Image (tube, rainbow, N blue to C red):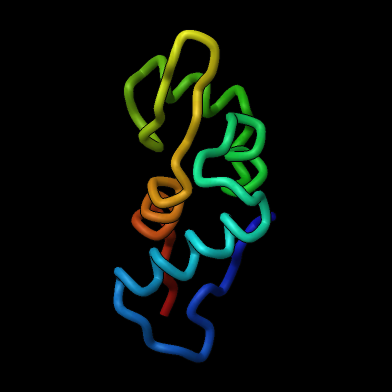
Length: 88
């Protein structure tokens, strides 16, 4: 689920964009925290890239318990919006 042209034809504030994108992700997966594979699907990054970013302490913030790594949909949305390339 790559999300392109989020604000095509509209002008949104950053908080509104985060809420909109977070809702889209939540609606697709039905949960507030995604596993690494799901996060990779949303962002278009490879699973190995997300694992590498965790090891380097860069990239999308994540939650880790004894058994699993989870990415909050709001953190995913923020990261996607902060790292998009704007073109004129």
